[in-house]
Length: 70
Image 1 (cartoon, rainbow, N blue to C red):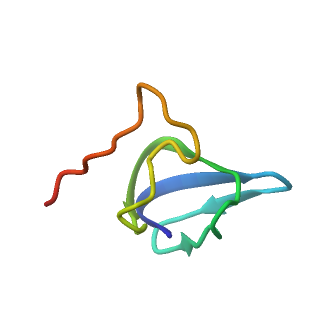
Image 2: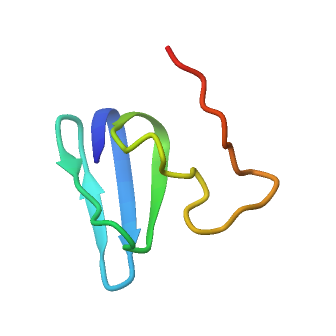
């Protein structure tokens, strides 16, 4: 789930692009291709299971396996 706090976020899906403004959110179903794009500066709160890799199904040099806790 992506919740926009400030700014504008575009969420590009396979068949459409969603435009999210402050206070709006989108839930992306598991295994759905998606690409978030910030329009300028955006503050987003992201909710996802701890087991979700930041790079999806691909592991590369950008993959974070050990997440820090706040």
